[in-house]
Length: 251
Image 1 (cartoon, rainbow, N blue to C red):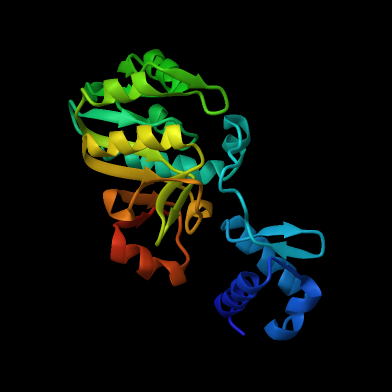
Image 2: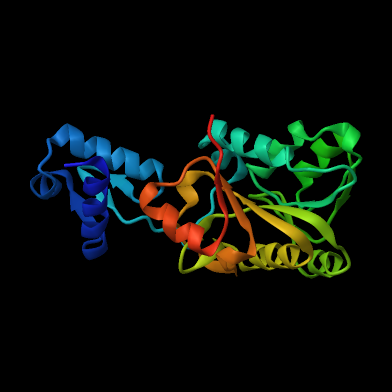
């Protein structure tokens, strides 16, 4: 049986059962224990399930959000690839919005200083790195969320309403065909939503593990931005391409 077929069977069974064991999967997949475990590992890396002792369960993280340090460790090389590609999209004298996040922060090292761009960001960490590179920077005011270093709240939204951007580069916790772009925090969702509305061209930077994932608060439908990712399973590609432009950045 082809790998993609086995993966689909696993996901279908998880839709019917919250938890499923390796032994329960071996018969319908007609596969050995080692093959099943390898399939579960591959699907976990794609963010499609969570492995547990002896099997797997549906991922459940609608409101959970890891810290910046925890996020930075996951799929780091893929994030760098995505960020480098997006930095190459910049043009001279662009005015851009750079969202808080572990993929967007990787863009900063690749921004050519001779482009004379202006950056608006809601991240204290991003702003510090941009200043170090002598890039003109505006940081939004508001309450600082300690886990993500992002500024949120009324002040940030009020400032965003006064700005216009040629391009916006945003991070997301999930991109799903039905739910669109989502993030766990409603306040963060509000800032992202405003940034998208104020920009001429929008890009969402997410590694493959965020595809077909749903978090608590919706930001926008998929048509609101182009997705830049490292890879997309072929079974999902058609559905995503029907709703947005999805660019796979390969090594």
